[in-house]
Image (cartoon, rainbow, N blue to C red; front, top):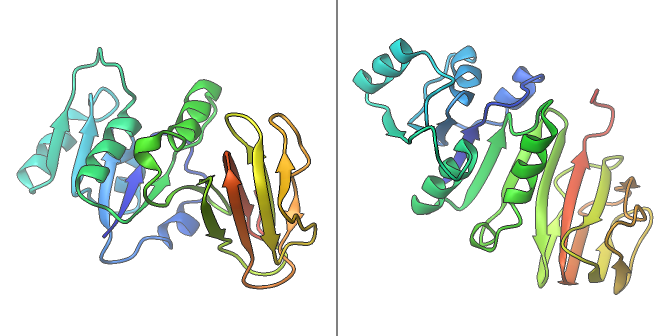
Length: 217
């Protein structure tokens, strides 16, 4: 089961992001992310959050229409997106897409990206999409197949210390059992030259950012 979570960040590529949704996907709205979903003519299966960014009348309509609503107090220790991720994990999702997870507030954007580094969320692929761009985490001991064709830009950024034992295949600048030090920009702006492309990591964690070739960012 795949779950798509709409968060309340920027939603500048609605048609491109709409095209990622499949008929069998379960749709979540993390509080104000409901507005992005509603603008596409879609309705959530689950609405999660303190509901301070949504129209109460719309919430009532959703409740009457069968949407599951999990309301939390405004004074809480977690963001609405983190709460939605927890519910998605409880539903035994095998893949999670997050739309509207990035925005103009740096604190929210950084917090949303770093959510993916939590150990409890590392058992399945979680991707944040913003039009042509995506980010996901690659923990040590795993291999990631790059989702994209030749010409796609791939950046590998170490998180939580250095990333060791990096081996890539299908990228212009290859690594074989290499290391990227924390804070280094060495892994930025690589390019897919052969499909399929892979990244394997022995130890540490990498943020893997993919930007589709020829798309406006």
